[in-house]
Amino acid sequence: MSSLEEPLGLGDLPKLSINRLERFSSPSSYRARADDGNSAKYNNACNAGTVMVFNGNSHPWLLQCRNADSSCNDVELRDLPRKVLSDLPRFVKIVEVGPRDGLQNEKGNVPTSVKIQLIHKLVAAGLSVVEATSFVSPKWVPQLADAKDVLTGIPRVPNVRFPVLTPNLRGFEAAVAAGAEEIAVFASASESFSKSNINCTIEESLVRYRDVTAAAKKHGLRIRGYVSCVVGCPVEGAIHPSKVAYVAKELYNMGCSEISLGDTIGVATPGSVVAMLEAVMPFVPVDKIAVHFHDTYGQALANILVSLQMGISIVDSSVSGLGGCPYAKGATGNVATEDVVYMLHGLGIQTNIDLNKLMEAGDYISKHLGRPLGSKTATALRKLTS
Image 1 (cartoon, one colour):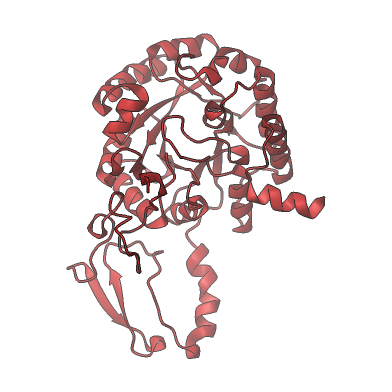
Image 2 (cartoon, rainbow, N blue to C red; image 1 turned 45 degrees about the horizontal axis):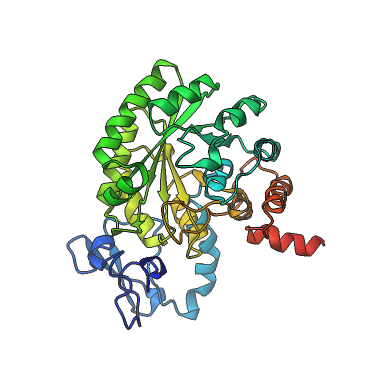
């Protein structure tokens, strides 16, 4: 069994005959022990004497296990919506990464005109941030060799941002020459992944990005920072939250106005996401943090929900679930934007996105790529209307 087939959990799931979770997690890494000094016991009459354990460091939204008897079901059910929904944001900003993070993983090259039309459809659907392309060496990512033509071909729309990835000063200079108004830099929380992805250590990459961000600030450009492998790495296994916090802090301190935390290989679960976010939040303001989940194990929506409950209000996603990672074998696509929007609207959270128009964009690129829709929401709704 390969490491990518091992689901990442809290390390104490019941009835596992083999230690499949060992590489990615351990109980002590992500959970406080129930018998530590920060825990308190609480007896509730509605639980017929059942003892519940609350951790003193837990967030107020963290629901603990309860064995409620029927005498208080009505009260609990009436309070449940308030408990679950009270801390959710009223508005969530979606950052669409399909045109860059999605299409960079395609085997064949997508015509420039198709990329521009896709971006046009995404903006028409109401998306205010669309990651357009990446100014990387065509030798390493030939799918994005047309970065200049894509960026210059996009009609500028008021209040819509088109960030582009610039991994070094050469890429930054090319982006500026093409008219970029916002750039992004990309560091990893995994030493091994950093070396295999961008051929340098974490510290070397941060030195490189300080030069890029300094140049961007001189030009008055907005800067977005990405951190990859925030929970697991295809080489190292589990990534300790403190490593994520360090890289996120460094990117924020060098001038990144937003830090996107990416589960590159899609192994995160809500439990590991909580631990990771708790480590980052003391160093980066919560309103400057975005989450970026791949859906390899079908955990992305659950991970987004628990992130929202912790105060996150920026979510990266990819139309029709496009994407993966060219340097992480087995990693599937990003969470589908259609599925994220459907969930958010169902929670009463505003996005300013028209789901029907968004699905049209997904239809467009999926048909061009010759593949089924990558969104469960779009697939289900199309069946209802066909």
